[in-house]
Structures are given as structure tokens and as C-alpha cells.
Image (spheres, rainbow, N blue to C red):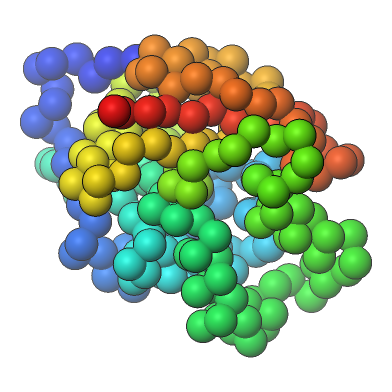
Length: 215
């Protein structure tokens, strides 16, 4: 799915933005995420919830939301979101947006099974047998399907890693699909190390946890 490098001559063709994102930009990023990653658990919560979550990530002191655009057309090509402390980000989100989140869920989503999956998503780092994980986490990442294979993920990771370093974040984690071999190769090429494989949701496919240490 992903190349490792952007050709040097094409670097100036793209740019990453974060601080200037408008509500329209956030909704556009959420729509891209839902279109690009239709199997992700977050997407099952519905586009309204994804927009609400991304808006909170963008506005939170614990969050980063970055958009990758083509310079010539300003077309949105991809995004990456992250938390410097994912537990604090989620607690802050729930405190500020509980009612709005409930209203945003699809009418057929509310069930004990889905509520359990939501709890699993937040609580997996604290399970017995899971190695101690850093609080910082890359939460979501996507590249528009028609723009894949051009090495654009490299730009998003560089930009996010620079922001983490500016915030003196030395370690971070990312959870990926267990069978996403190409993404695993991309991460490991950049120095990320696989530390755990687990089923975050017992009835779903396995996930892999990678950790990076920039010290």
C-alpha cells in the first residue's frame, strides 16, 4: 500500500498543514478517512462521530491533526492524527463531547457488543500481558486510494515526528492491522519495532503494536 520514499524532485509538489485547519477541513479529512479505511472500527461509529473526534483532536493540547495536500490544486491527499497522551485525549474528549458523541452514532450502532468494542479500544494498553506502552500514539492515517504508491506517507510521518520531537516526545506507539505487511515494512524501515500482537476486539482480526524510540 505504501512506498518508502517520495522522489526528491516531487517534494515541493505537496505540503502539510495543521494549525490553519478549518471545520470544513476537518470534515473533509473525516470523509477521506471513512472513504479510505472502510474496515476501521472508528469508521463503524459513523462519519458524524469521526468528524467530532477529529475536531477534538485538532483543538486539543494533547492532539495533532495534519493534512497532506497537493500544492497546485490544494487537493486533500491524506492525513495523520496522533495524541501526545492518548489516555488524556480520550478522557478529555468524553468529558467535553459525551452527549454529542451519543447523538452522532448511527441508530443501528448502539448495542452492548459495540459498546464493549469501544471500551476495548481505549483499555487495551492496560491488559495483563501487554508490554508497557508509551502514552503517545499515532491514532489514524490515510492516503486517498487514487494517490497511493507515490510515497506520500513519508511526508506525513516526517511532519508528525517533527511535532513530537518539538514537544519533547521521545517514544510513541501505533496500532495497525496484523496483516498489513507493507505498512509494517514502512514502519520498521523508519525504526519502529513490533512489540506485541493481540486481538483488541476478540472477534476481529489481530492487530500489531509498533513502538519507536527517538532518543
